[in-house]
Amino acid sequence: MLASVFLAGGWSTLRDPKRVAPAAEPVAVPVAFRIPGLTENPEQLVRVNGAVQVGAGLMLATGRVPRLAALALAGSLVPTTLAGHAWWKEKDQDRRAAQRTQFLKNLSLFGGLLIATADTHGKPSLAYRTQAAAVAGRRSARHARRETSSALTDAAGTLRSMSKNAQQTVARQF
Image: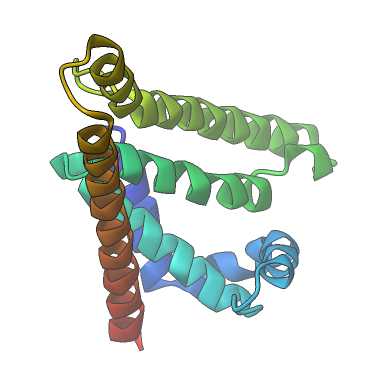
C-alpha cells in the first residue's frame, strides 16, 4: 500500500513531465548543479524522478529488495516535496493550508519509508548477524566478511538494475 502513491505519481510524471517541470525547477537545477553528470534540464530530472518512483515502487510493492526500494523512494520524495509543496511560499491562506497538508502527508510517507528501510521482516539485521557470529564464534570472521560482501554485491546489482530499468523507461518515453 505504501508504494501505491509512488506508482501513481511516478507514472503520471513519466507521462507528462511538462506538467511538473516548472514547479521542480527551483529545486531540480540547484541539485543538478551540485551532482556531477546530472542534467540541469528540469523536465528530464522530473522524468528520472518519476522513473525512480515507478521502479522502486514496483520493487517495494512486490517485495523485491524492499529496504533498498524504500530508501530510493525516500530519496525521491525529498525534492518532490520541496518543489511541489513549499507551503511557506504561499500568500493565499487557503492554498497555504492545502500545501501544508500535502507537505505533512509527504513527511508522513517519508517516515513510513524510513521504517520500511529498517524493517528486516523479523530477521536479525546483517549487522546483528555479523556481530553475533563473531561473538559466538559460530562463524569465522572471514565467513562473516564474505556474507557482508555478498549482501553488498547483491545490493549493487539491484541498484544497477534499477538504473537500467529507469533509463529504459525514460528512453521509451521519447
